[in-house]
Length: 332
Image: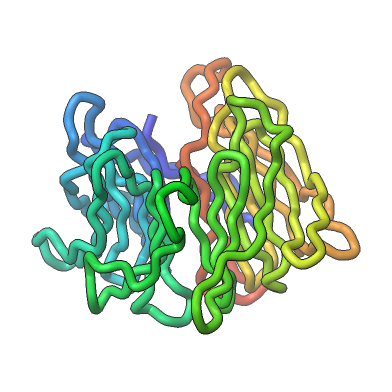
């Protein structure tokens, strides 16, 4: 079931739901910008078509949709009216990353196109230099300059033997570092001056069915949160290599993707795994993270309360609001 659900995470107001119109069968990503939420996914399990639906939080309704040639695995607002998307078909070779202006119906600007057996599944816009976008996937890791599309400005790996699978790629708050999670580790690149690869966080104790699928920088640019498909959140300090388990969610059946979102203005952390969601208020690493304020479960939105549909995407509203205003977050 494709539903956008919105909560006020300050006052825990009743949830508001927006049913997406027909056309999308599976959601992969969600992003917010002011009053709008962009929802990326696929239109069918039988063909290649992807879609981004735009939802207005003010109207609490879907207001427009945009078709893409491939399934949309990752979506971000590059500018208020321009989307950055990573698109691919399952685990096949056909994949692209592009910029699309929502005000027009053209195909947009093609940023990157995969080579054989190299999928593109994640991207992240630089926080201060809007010309730079980091893109990652299967044996794909590069920084692109939108002024010179299709030509990587920086390759993150020196050779193909050193590359691997990337699920999530994230710039640090000031854009000095780049973190990428995938399989059994998180790699770090120092992007001050020439881009150099630093030591990473590796966890060989994870079994064959468990791998990192989320990473998130804290404000200090030293600590990184990671979420794995077994439902465990870890904190890793890139300077002293200290590791701490923050929380372990209960797992029902097979592993699922973990979801993390952070609002730096209010220091709120949202975590999600399968049908479990937690909100951490005034989140900080030291001296010790505050206890989770409350938890909710997504199965409340289902007609059958005994059925569990895993959380597909989670996003805290990133707008600059004061403490007395509503601070919404959206889930799919």
